Image (tube, rainbow, N blue to C red):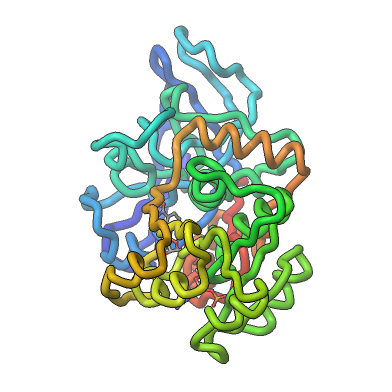
Length: 335
Ligand SMILES: NC(=O)c1ccc[n+]([C@@H]2O[C@H](COP(=O)([O-])OP(=O)(O)OC[C@H]3O[C@@H](n4cnc5c(N)ncnc54)[C@H](OP(=O)(O)O)[C@@H]3O)[C@@H](O)[C@H]2O)c1
């Protein structure tokens, strides 16, 4: 079998394939024939040595993938041969609050990821994927979709008629928009590109704001919400956008701090004066992934995928992702 190998911080040019024997599942393990994998911003950070968590010197990259079960160990009870599955982002975070150490079980960072033809998982580290999704679609879920679901529904759940501000048009943002709309909320999306905003509107976004043309985008958010401000913010920017996000949020509203794309720092007095909540979000648990899957199945939501690459085009997929031409997700097929 082939698997990709990435030297941490070595850059995308160092992405290479290696040949291995197909592994055999032990007692409570499941052998999955991987069928598709998807890229996240984290994968670029890892490839370029900008990811903060401790890592191995070299790994099989990518956290997100889906495939079919081809063999199970003798003690496996959760899955059977032929089941369609996806790996969970942190293999040890099954439910409840994230514990210290769960981050060390994240795929494609601390542990080998899924850009390979076969991979053995502990049976606890997998979920069944929704029947209406292809492998390519299901491969997009473990990081971006679970993060969006965690932010909007796991803590202070979004309710019918609320308003959500979503920064950017990438993976997390696109899922947040789709989930917010399915829940009966208004979704205001920001982007550097009018073309991307138009595409997001076609997929259901209620309003779009170009954050390059409108630097103080909070003013436009206030206008769109009748002066009130939004109930939730999907804050994928980080320190560089947080001040605008606070200014766009109603008192008592919730900012879900997710991203690190826009560096910067703010004085915390702004959080106090606006009376908003700021909550750090780190992907999510298996329980959250399963709840997400129920919502996707109920609402027949299909992930937004900009482009699908072949297995032997992984470098091109990384390059395309790096150019940030996509909305939603970028996928690599594993034939
Ligand atoms: N905490 C967690 O658990 C978690 C999980 C997943 C992702 N993340 C983080 O969330 C962020 C998004 O991840 P992703 O995988 O969805 O990325 P992605 O698909 O690469 O999308 C990134 C998007 O960010 C937008 N963006 C760039 N600069 C921006 C700025 N100054 N203000 C607002 N938006 C900006 C861009 O939107 P336009 O091109 O439309 O301008 C781009 O499409 C990353 O920082 C990632 O590390 C965190």
